[in-house]
Amino acid sequence: MEQTASWAQRALALLVDWIVSSLIVIGVIGPAGWNENAASGLYVLGVFVLESTLLTALLGGSFGKLLVRLRVVRVDGSGRPVDLLHCLLRQVMVALVIPPLVYRPDGRGLHDMAAGSATATLASLQGRK
Figure 1 (cartoon, rainbow, N blue to C red):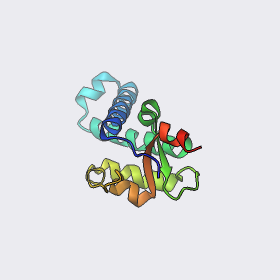
Figure 2 (figure 1 turned 120 degrees about the vertical axis):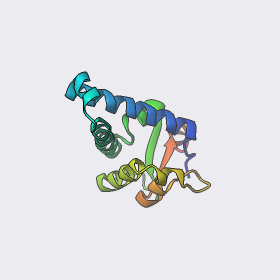
Figure 3 (figure 1 turned 45 degrees about the vertical axis):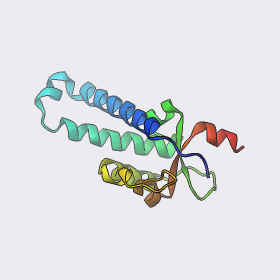
Figure 4 (figure 1 turned 180 degrees about the vertical axis):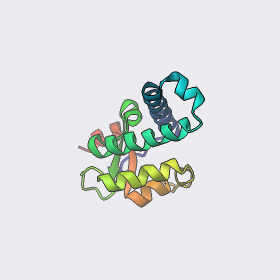
């Protein structure tokens, strides 16, 4: 199996995704709406789940993961991308916070186990070719 990403890499990718999601919400509802709207955080969470689901299904990772050079891959070794439904399941579980914190020794959290995926470094994926 590929080398799974470190917690530092995952945290950096999540931080980038959260900042980008926040900026998108601010761009849509404006800075005043951001400060006055109690649901701003839920909007950011929704954008995060949507962005990370679509980009993971299409490109192999969210904006943050792509920037940090991580990829979400199937653990079955098929080389096929994770399908949209499994990406959505994975991201909803990430949004629940607890599943990523409960993980196996190989670094795969409950969200990855449920989706049949793993977060691998791009270097490890290129090294197996």
